[in-house]
Image (tube, rainbow, N blue to C red; front, top):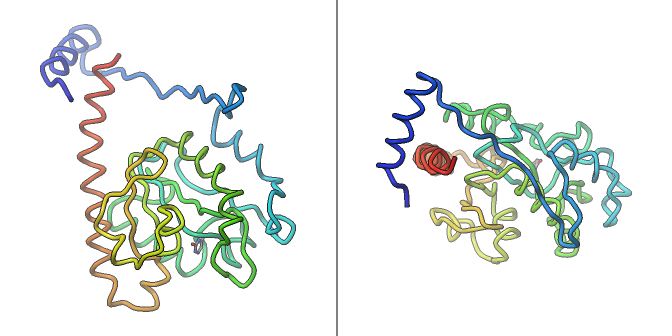
Length: 235
Ligand code: URA
């Protein structure tokens, strides 16, 4: 629960001390691995640590390891299923036509892959012929996604498309049955929306996708205000 009286007192006190500048402590990362060893200190360090991965057969076939792109402190984490041909060539998620569509949707809610958004995939390497990820591949790769989530600490995860949604939620169900519900993944709220490629294939989906993006924005704005107060009260 947010104690608004304490928040108010805090702001009055800091105003007396520091004027109009409000100091809030930065996020400190002290991740400990299951075996007790220290975890990576940053997303960049983690990227370097895993980019030679050969845990599953996809590693031998890839051109580039597609770790992810965006703001390492983003509130919004978008997750697709796996890199396609273009992503494998460039080493960045969503760089083809679907990626351009995604960029447009983000810009409509005043965000971008550099601004409060991080984008990655469940799998970091391209499956042959763009087939769906195999359960064994997801099993090998998912710990990387979990670590990315721990490092980024997003306030909301959005799965892009049915395959990403069903893979993350472990549900074999239609997209329509996963949308409009706030699920949870690795301790973070998760919503499922259309894959941008589906919007290119069928523009009838666009109004519903737009509703999803508006919901995302409203959720993050509300959450940000509360989070800011909660975080401020702690220090
Ligand atoms: N589709 C995905 O799910 N991910 C990408 O990176 C590109 C297309």
